[in-house]
Image (cartoon, rainbow, N blue to C red):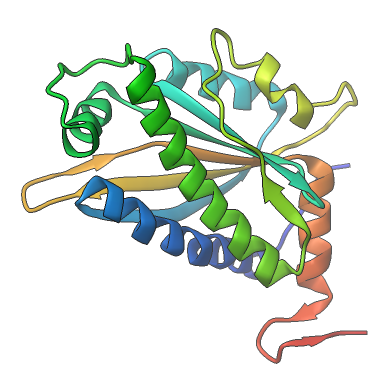
Length: 211
C-alpha cells in the first residue's frame, strides 16, 4: 500500500525539520566562520532503488559522512562534502592549506565527522522535543566503497517499501558566493508512519492531543 500525506502534513513535517536544522546551522556557522543556511525544500517518497541511485551519484564526487538515528525512529543522515568544502573547512578549522579534493586525511575526516555529529545531534534533539520521541544519534562514520550496505537498515525485502527522503539544501554563504552542501535525511516506512500518526493525533496549533 502506498503512503500518502496531505499538503498540510507535508508542510508540518517540513517545518519541524526546519526548526531542528536552524539550531544546527547556528552551531555549524560557528565552526565554518561563515553564515550557514539549512533548509528543507522537498519531501520525497521514492522506491529504494531510486534512493540508492541518487546516493551513489553524490558519493562519486563527494566525501560522505553518515549518521544514524535510532530509538523510536529509524533513520540516517548523509552529508556530502565537495572538494571545495573540504578545502574551506580545512583552512578555517585546521589551518591547513590544501587543494580542492575529496581525498582526505585523518584530521580532515575527524573534522567532517564532528560537523556531522553537531548537525545530526541538533536535529535529533529538536525532533525528540517536538514529536515527544525517544531518539538519539549514533556516532557518525565515514563509509567506504558502495553505500548500499550502509543503508540496508532502512531497506527491507518487502514489496512497495518506500523510505521517506528529505533533501536538505545546505549552503555556506559569504559576501561573494554561496555553495551548496548536499545533505539527505532518510526515514524508513515504519518511522514515516509513526511521524504521520503523531501529526494526525496532535493539535500543533493548540498544543493538545486529540482524541
